[in-house]
Length: 337
Image (cartoon, rainbow, N blue to C red; front, side, top):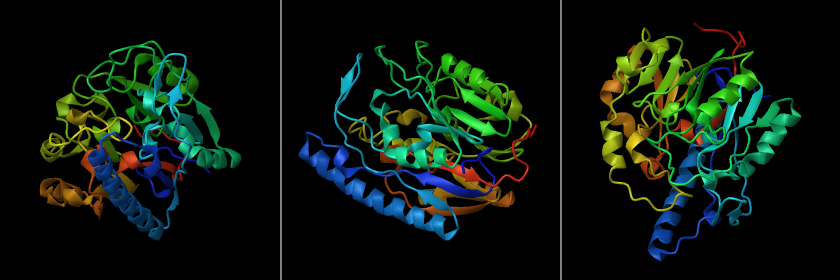
């Protein structure tokens, strides 16, 4: 049954995203052929990732295809929904609660349907299942990135929230807004302490900004003075974003149903997945990040490298492609501070 209180205790169940090959049809035949090749390569690598985790005793769930037809609401319409590659964006798991987020992007409006069979199974096992109010998305000229999300509806991409026992950090800059923060406070404020982050240097999804490896230890590319006061006295492993930004600057944007276009805030080396307090999974092109690797090894953290050739085409790290459903936390919900 669903049970997740933090990002670092032993992982036992999770979802890995997938590619729906039939979901995307591009007008440019050359672009279509290239995307089909990338999709096939990515599917093979995701299957390898699944096998690696299963060999460690971790149960893995995968999405199923859905009819990908044009989307229409009273306020807007578009060709179809996004591919089901990043379940992390869609759901926030707090303890035994799974919450469908109110996404910033219109094309993600019905993306949760790819995962409905998994969430229904968890609900039948006893998990609490709820959704944020569906946003109207009737505002114009907004794109995720450096912009503030208009406060017309509660909006919050799930990775804008980071759980740490009874403390939950919520970023309201770039992929969430203050109404979204208030929604979480009112729904769960009697159980959790919500801390708002609104900082011009910490933009968008928190899991690509900072990762709690275990109590008192943080992986981030930010300088200490940029971090929320809560983390100012923690040990910090400093990641270098230079390689990510260099690769990201060379990307070609194809279609919003395939890619995130916000390459400027991409720091995928921070976006690692903890299997336990001493083991993390990273993409294998970070083998050359010797300074970061040395810092991790000094803290007795082993790194499992896995291939994901087109991580920067999709603009996704390891954590983006997963959603934990169960971690073994013997002490249950506690305050680590």
